[in-house]
Length: 405
Ligand SMILES: *[C@@H]1O[C@H](CO)[C@@H](O)[C@H](O)[C@H]1NC(C)=O
Ligand SMILES: *[C@@H]1O[C@H](CO)[C@@H](O)[C@H](O)[C@H]1NC(C)=O
Ligand SMILES: *[C@@H]1O[C@H](CO)[C@@H](O)[C@H](O)[C@H]1NC(C)=O
Image (cartoon, rainbow, N blue to C red; front, side, top):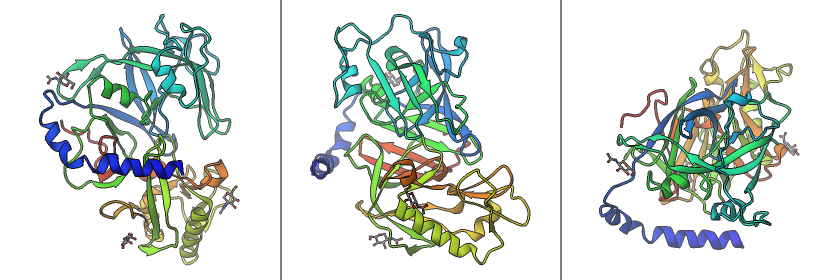
């Protein structure tokens, strides 16, 4: 019942003032700018996209895993550190810039719980756990983030982030080469919220993940194309970028899968469907492949389901004809919007040249009924998380070209 109430409240608050917002904007004297960063990384074999960001004065560079599925930014920190993968000279060193637990940002971080704060001057502890069992523990600190805005100005806003001195990584994977996680979620502690509060950008974040690796990340709305973007409302119940309800179509035909909610999460390499949707989709794909030269490759442990051809494949494009497009049909907006998952947005080629399904069973990893759209299904798209208008947009883009500003 709580979620239904907040959804109604959201519709009331957002739809009603929309017509006036464009008038108000023209009266704001200096309109916020944007900032763009190149990305590196890929879906396979790395499994993440990362950004190089400077912190402090003099600035020191850190590579962050970008994560729209969480709010807190944290970096491996020499305090001293356990479970750090970086050598001490590459870790962040706090210099008396610890945020006390009585600071409102500490309360926001721990909301709806209260921070442990027996003495108001004590450090603000944090702990984040990710769906893959990885975690980071530490204390909140504040430091400058030097940024070059697209309007030419150089800014150094103070940003609160986590100094992580106790990390653990899921044992199934090698630990990432990154120094930490850049939390792009919409919570108060998120980097975006902090840039917005400092008046630097509008409350919009976006990314373009290239299928060739790399791409770009941006904060602010100056790069958002004015035409051609497909938009769907963001649901307001939680801190995640959740959309829906949506129906799934396979090869343009209904699958009977309806009313799905989908979380857009760059912290996930692959896409997860709930048990029922997953079962339905693998049956449909399996049926098509019965009359194709592809055979199941049980020996390939890259992902749960892989297929082999007569000879190893180099690119997903070689098998594109054997697989169909999965359409996500959002049925809630003022207009219906579709996100098309062509085969290259749900398949990868393994190291041995088999083709593997980048769609996974979310129920198996404890996601219950949620569905998660991961990096694999956002390649070649400029994705726009617009918290000003509470909507998510996407448009086909050349992600290897930094946008002109
Ligand atoms: C660029 O944008 C920032 C943030 O909105 C603003 O403070 C600054 O004055 C702008 N600079 C120029 C040159 O317009
Ligand atoms: C998407 O759903 C809407 C509403 O149910 C329906 O009218 C429309 O035909 C669907 N679009 C596609 C491409 O199936
Ligand atoms: C998905 O995971 C659930 C929970 O582990 C399991 O019960 C179900 O059989 C799985 N579905 C498929 C198709 O593997």
